[in-house]
Image 1 (cartoon, helix red, strand yellow):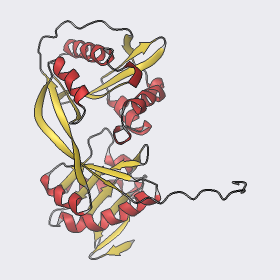
Image 2 (cartoon, one colour):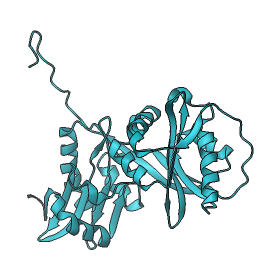
Image 3 (cartoon, helix red, strand yellow):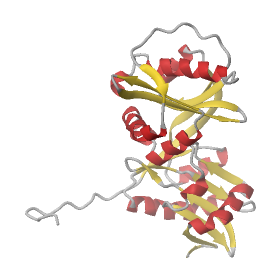
Image 4 (cartoon, helix red, strand yellow):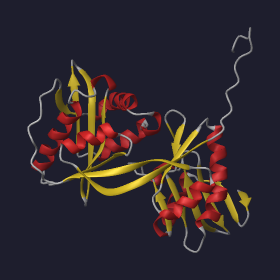
Length: 298
């Protein structure tokens, strides 16, 4: 355990699960990333840090990396009676060092509340984008042009293909790992893909909560974009949801993804006004040493 001012920091362990769960439940200041993974299931991944005041757990920070040397702040929680900035400073300093050691050169965070803005700004994060929300609520679907490809149900055994399509469709920061997409697949109530000439070229995963259905992820291979694959998936999804008794579905996309927004607007999705600013920073990751000329590389 390492001291930092009045706080003692250490790495989280699986044995801390109950203690961390209690903090996440009671914390006054809470930030969780918008995805399908429970912060408690990330305790074996670094960086994942705990802050103690005496024997009491007062802070938790987790930002395990995603693909392509990028990472998101996935959990930052602070107990009541503590200034979030005073807890953030030592945790972020420790986490940033771990990220550099892991060759993570780009970090991002959603702004889940204005209380986070001064924390991120002081740490060198800058607002670069936003996640915006749309909703479809029972509007009549207009006829859509037909397209090549066949919509079919996805099986869990196809997860590697889903990850492949996802990695091709999104820029590095917005790609999801195998583990994240596996969690999404486990929670999906509708998982469908478009097959073309025996190959998966597009997919969507939709989850549900007490608030309704949510189109959690949709991706199309770059070479197949603009050919109606996404429209085919969304229209089929809405028909399936209607048959299950859902009269609405929400989704979110990036504020700068105008092509995606145009698609959803054509399908009568309306922007809800809910949005989460995205902040990013870069970390100084040293280049890996290259082998000397003439060395065997062994």
